[in-house]
Image (cartoon, rainbow, N blue to C red):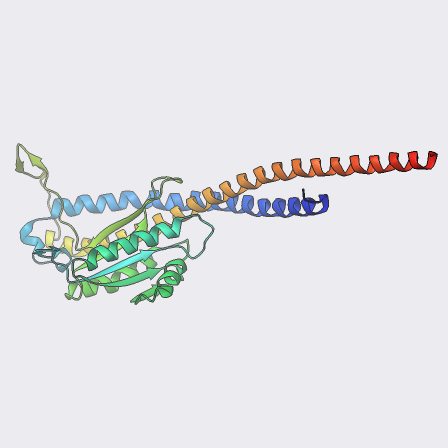
Length: 300
């Protein structure tokens, strides 16, 4: 059994660590609320964009927009020869398996595309992803570590614009984003989203035939001009949603990890305190026995 002095030192160490994890849990809880508000605020705008594009979409118009250009088919899958993969991770750790799950999903997607003879370039956001792929000697096309957990629309524009321009010129056939989808504070699965090309909306069917809702719009300017403006906005919005959802998921994962660490510290303190009490009791019993034995020896 450890000595009481050693146990007392360990108890103080665990108490100090528990204070730190509890503080980090409270900070993450506070940040999570603001990050969650950004996620909720971004969804109605994205939904409205999707609905307007769906109403305006027509096959004859799609042929005029590079962002709607769909890759062909090959024997091994979609005819995507050149693709870009954007991985979004956090700059800090102490959030459980959050970053590991995102990196694992990115590796799975890279292997899947490379199995289809697709030349894939890797773009990274976040120090954790950059550190991992540098360690594995993977070629990195671009990296950003300055966005942090408060992404803005300007950050999304900076990420999306170069990729959209290259896609429009034919330099890329597809652009995917790997991010953490924020369902709730405890459900943040890693997700792969294809943002380019813009997928044509599914035709709503009625009686087995494709038909659009019977709504008569007066468009000013033309549908072509409106689509020309909305398509880049829609792609940029997808980048922004990926950034804010990953930021919210990071805070949720860190809060969960720090709560688990705090609970584990409390359990460890209970065990250490009991062990200390038993050790202290044994020490007192031994001291009393020595005193009684010494007294008896003096009498003899």
